Length: 132
Image (cartoon, rainbow, N blue to C red; front, side):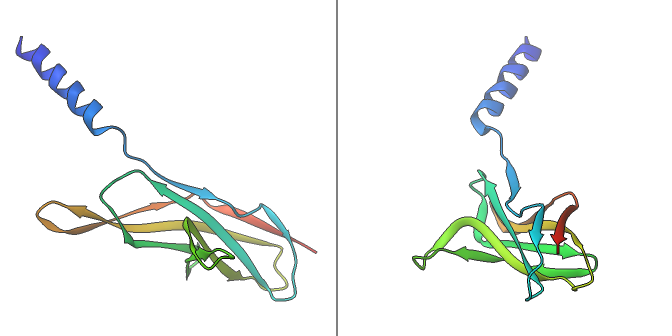
C-alpha cells in the first residue's frame, strides 16, 4: 500500500510541476552573401517556461574559437525591445568562406532562501557559409 501511495504522490508532483524547458532557436541563415563591412549577423530566440528565470540575468554570447561575442536584445523599428530575440555582429576575415560558431545562453534562476543560481545552455557547432 505504501508503494502505491508513493507512486500517486510522485505522479501528482510530476503533473503539478509540469515540464520546464529552455530552448535556443537559431534564426541565422546557413549562408549569406559576402559584404564589404566584413560583419555578419547571428540571431537567436531563447525561450524558457521556467518562472524562476530572472529576465535581467539572461546573457547570451556567440563563441567563435576562443573569442566571445556578447549578444544584445533586438530593437524593433518602433523602438521597443523584441522579447526573447538576441543578435550580434561577428567579424569574418575577407579570406574566410565560413564562420563556425556556437551560441551559449547564461541565465540566473531565483531560488528560495538563497542567492540566485547560474545556469547555461549551449548549441551544437553551426556553420555560416559566406558566398562571393
